[in-house]
Image 1 (cartoon, rainbow, N blue to C red):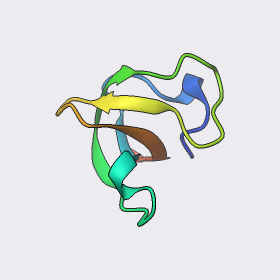
Image 2 (image 1 turned 120 degrees about the vertical axis):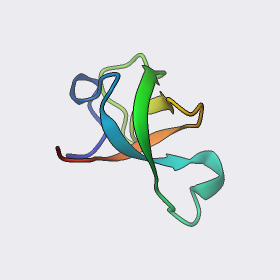
Image 3 (image 1 turned 30 degrees about the vertical axis):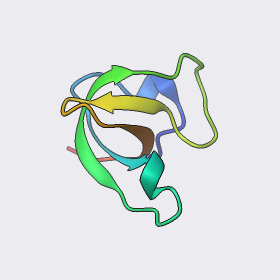
Image 4 (image 1 turned 90 degrees about the vertical axis):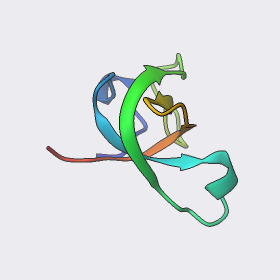
Length: 65
């Protein structure tokens, strides 16, 4: 799954995000979702989230259980 639909993402979910500083390189940072920051139900570049460690970025992938 990609991270474009808000309904697929919830606190406690493990995801891979792209930080603002990594947008050019595409480096993915992994962590656990703490907060959803995008209010719309869909975003073409990925739903913006805050991880438990405080990092903010757009969801690039959802890690399967």
